[in-house]
Structures are given as C-alpha cells and as structure tokens.
Image 1: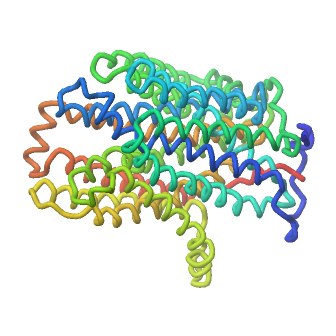
Image 2 (image 1 turned 120 degrees about the horizontal axis):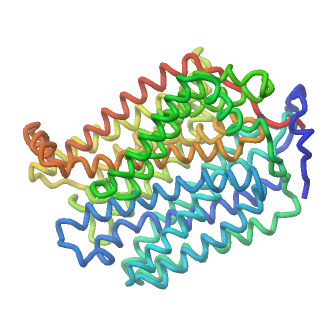
Image 3 (image 1 turned 180 degrees about the vertical axis):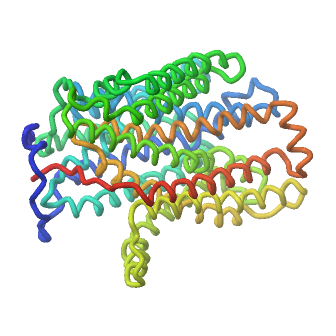
Length: 523
C-alpha cells in the first residue's frame, strides 16, 4: 500500500506531465471490481420494474401497478444516489476511500441476498433494496475518487483515458446484465435472477481486496477548522442577507415535511434537502468575503469553487430525470409494442450499454479529433451542454411514438432504437465527462464529498420524476392534459423534453463564464 502524506497533497502543482507515463498497474483491480459491481447493480435494477408489476405488486388493482412500480423504482434510485453524501463524508473524514468501499460492499452483498431470499415478502424485499441503496450509494463517490487518487501531475493526462475506460467497463457489465437477467427471471424465477447479481457483487469485493497492497491510499483529512462547512458557517454569520436566506432554507425544509401526507416521506425529504442546499448555498455565496480574516484565502476560494460546481450539477439534474426513466417509462412503453415472443421489453435496455461501448471510442478517436481539426475545441462543459440537449431530442422521439400508440396503431419495438441512440449519445457526453470533471474541480479534502454531490444530482433528477408523477394525479392537471389533446404519458414525455432543452440552454450560458480548475495531486 502506498500512502500519500497530506503535506504532499498540499504541495505546489508545478510538475509537468510525463508524455511517456503509463497507466498505474493497480487500476486493473479497480476496473475489474467496477465491471462486476455494475453487472450486479444493473442486473437487479433492469428487471426490478418488470418483477414489481408481475409479482410483488400483484395485490394492487391492475391499473395501479405500473404507477406504483415507477414510484418504487425511482424511490430506490433516489436512495442509491442520496447515500453518496454519507459515503463521501465517511471516506473523507474517517475511514479513507478503500476501507469505506470494502465495508459497504459487504452491506451491498447482504442486500442482494435479501432480494433472492424474500422474493415473496414485501418487507424483506424492500429491506434488500434499502441495503443495496446504502451499499451501492455509499461506495459510488469513493470508487470514482479512488480512481483519481491513483494519478498525479506526472500522469494526469492518462486519467481521462482511464475514466473513459472506467465508464466503458460499467457499460460492459450493464450490457450483459440487461441482456441476460430478463431471461433468467422468466426461465428460472426471481431467486435465481436476483441471486446471480449477488454472486457478482461478492466477486467484485474479492477483486477489490486482492489489490489492497498496490493502491495509492490518500488518508482521510484530519479535522479542519477551515473546512467547507466551517467556512460556510462563518460566511452565513457575517451578515444579515445570508442569515435570512439560510433561515428561509430551514423554514422551507420544515415546510417540505408537511407535504408528507400528499407526496410521501421520500419526496418531502428530498425537497427539504434541495431547500437547505439552495438557499444556504446562495447565502454563503453572497457573504463569502465576510469570512476573510477568520479563514485563509485558499479555503475561501475552495468554497467558492465548490459552490460554482454545485450550480452546474443542479443544471444537470433534468438530464437524469430523463435518463433513468428508460428503465421504467420506456420499458412500460415497450410492453405495448410488437416484438418476438422470445424478447422481453426490459432487454431493450441492453442497447444502451452496447451503444456506450461503441460511442466512447468513436468520440475519442473520430468525432473529437475531427471537430478539433475544424477548429472547434470540445471542452468538458461543451460536451455536457450538448448531451443534455440530445436527451431532450430522445424524449421528443418517444413522445411521438407514444402518440401513435395512443391512437391505436401498433408498431415494432425496433423503433425504440432511435430514442435509445439519442439518449445514449447524450449520456456519453454528460455522464462519462462529468465523472472526470467533478474529480478535477474538487479541492483535495473535498474529493469524495464533491463526487457525492455529483451523485446527488441523480437523486434530484429522480425526485423530479416522482414530483411529476404525483402532480398529474391532481384533477385540475388531468383536465389540462386532456384539453391539450395528448394522452397522459405522451404529455409527460413532451414535458420532460422541454425540461431538458431549458436546462441545456441554462447550462450552456453558465458554462461560458465558469473558471475551470485543476485539482489533481502533485506527483
């Protein structure tokens, strides 16, 4: 094990990259671990909606099962991408990234075991989903940041290649999981279909453990009087406007919990979190200079950098509200399409990771160099702006298809290839880019937490889905949708497309003035 002292992390980053630097050998263990872990996650996730509708929610009236399944699915995804906040904090402050990943991986394995054992027991099955959300979510920011820790200033130019390979192996595991698990569910039942992903998660944990003596281990940061939260508290206390905004955030958060009877605890809790982060962050930004003299300039500048990144992350949330519905709304749409008897609707999701594995090398080897020769610099923020817009185009496509289906005209599931291609191109531009971008913008002591905020953007994206699903149950909203001439599902599809286009425009405008930072550690 190679431990990097904190004083070295804080050293000036003046060393030039070595063009002959090789990718660190220990990366192969992390990549292998990630491939197996992603198979386990997507293997259970991609059959979850189908299993809920056809088995666990059979006690509900038939017309209510699809909506209930979407609520369970997106609530689970919210949990998966909420717990990175906890995992990143534990890694950065107490246990370090490797230990946090290893121990939460065991929790993750226990969750898979619950799914396989309690296929007919709702309480046991939901406990398994909760454990997977905790384990998977907790390790999520740590694994991405752990990859970045293996690089320094001398080989950081290799990091983009590895982050792309990291994302490629995620989709390699997802492809086979999406293709095979629906077959196992239909042919062998839920215990086998959920048990196989559990076995893969155990293998992932063993692979991680096997490389423990080769990793670069960045120790957790010691208690810091100039941490992000301490600087933020000082800024809030520095003046009335900031305090007022912080109080408004707290009041709005308390008010969100009053919505529990109407929207449920998960939606209320997430809205409360959004209120605290949004109003509190605005208050800190307004009064950050008031913390000077009590905290060093580099700490204050670090807080300002994090807040800038959080604005970008907030504008990415609409993308995730569109992307994650391919495993719920799009699967339910596919059920109404014609297809071979041997083909399951959920298997269509295998197209997404397959396209990712094609598009990542195509973009890096063909598209980006070609655009560069034309004089167009393909920056990370430009890629992400375009990616959000492409997700909107994909939902225009599925919306048009839904209108045709609502009109009673059946057609083949093959048409879903078009929206999958558009959405996947957007995913490569947003998600693969965002992983490396989030790491590079994070100050050394905030790597895990800032990666957790990147994951939190997925939570908020799925929150918008639940809010919209709850909102369309209102009688006035239903009447408005009927007056539009569209069916409920088609209307929601066009609504989400417009949501993405608005977010892409806002993201592009903010990105034009964003000061890109470089926070890779020194060699």
